[in-house]
Amino acid sequence: MGTTKTQIFMKSLKMIAIVALTMFGTAALAQSKTEKIKVLGNCGMCKKRIEASLKDEAITNADWDKNSKILTVTYNSNKINSQTIQQKIANAGHDTPQVKAKNEIYDKLPGCCQYDRTGKPSKAH
Image 1 (cartoon, rainbow, N blue to C red):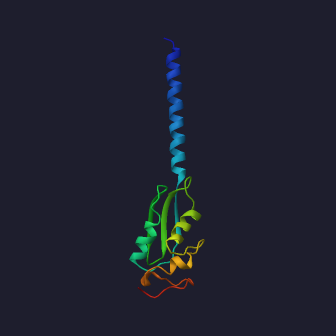
Image 2: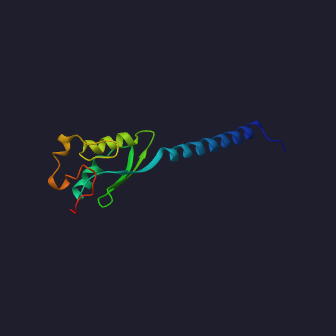
Image 3: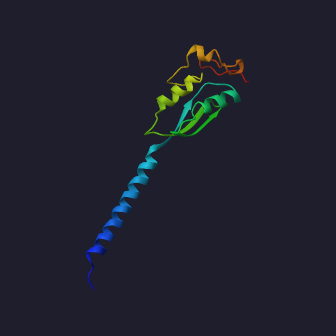
């Protein structure tokens, strides 16, 4: 019994669909990037402010550790980059390795949130 043109077409269509879905899945995974960024701050209020500054559809997770001063952020690298993320943080008043917050924004932070801008470890808060 021979294979009909319809059967060949359906097999080809299935193969194309499998290849397309595999490529799409790989591309979707490649978009997600997790990065660790040093962010200066002191307390729980800083944590809330830093994490809130990163509420963005391109950012899927942001967690700042007040002890290590390290932000772990996961984002879609096709929609946002590290420089833009660090600018968002600086706009909230917190310095990062690439972007320093403007003095007028930093000066408006509550006293407990005003970290040492020289980069030296601050005293416990």
